[in-house]
Image 1 (cartoon, rainbow, N blue to C red):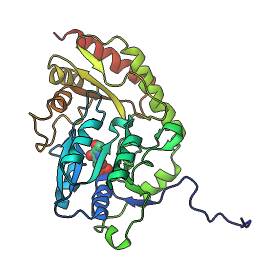
Image 2 (tube, helix red, strand yellow; image 1 turned 180 degrees about the vertical axis):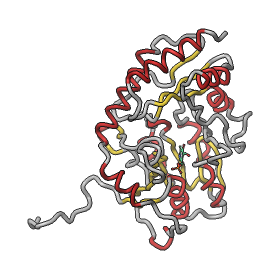
Image 3 (cartoon, helix red, strand yellow; image 1 turned 90 degrees about the vertical axis):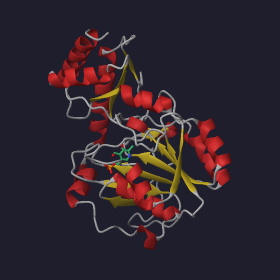
Length: 315
Ligand SMILES: Cc1ncc(COP(=O)(O)O)c(C=O)c1O
């Protein structure tokens, strides 16, 4: 190969990228790219939340596109149920499958699923909105297995907007029409200059410290992921509160100054309660503690101490 003055090969483990104002806008444009026909379905995980204030980051683009959709099961760790996906692929004309890497704990069956998608001519879309800067086995960037992947910058960095998508196939220029909104220059600047290594180290250390302080969950609560697999950069620290005590614990923590979230506490009504009871059980049980890069050791100690005392008061 000729020796050149400047690098011109864009193929150094980097996927092409399109910046957008948000992850939902990136997802909307991926759906447009896929060009669903009348009888073709988009298969979604049966764990998608909605709030009055923010709508549904995952479902709003699906609804707006008018494509037909169906859901597949997830297990008690929010992992995809591969056999349920295979069942749905046999039953219906599935054109695309969405996989969500919840809280950055990547879906371990993604490679197996990609093989199925390739064999059945299905587009695989990875929702990496919770998983900036994470990687899967063998240091593959998260999102690089599927045909498309989308990310949310503002969930990871202190920006007011920001998302992007990557793709392994070709993207038709004409179909990637923006709706007029663009990502802000401030966000791009922050995204390009952030100290990703320091952020990753802090988030993992915070998660592990929380794990060590809450190490003996029992009948009253459990921890969704009791270790951080290599490559994961956690979004937050999810715990499951047992005995229908989630609301009580949530409000007691807020009262005591512990800012805790309950992500996906309400699922979209299109997910049928009778068909997906486990999804509703998880949604009714989860609390998420912040462990982002601004959280310090003393904050983790305080949150854990208050949480354990509140849990002690529960039946
Ligand atoms: C899994 C998941 N995907 C996508 C989104 C949308 O992200 P954004 O707020 O950047 O549109 C959200 C949050 O709303 C989400 O939780």
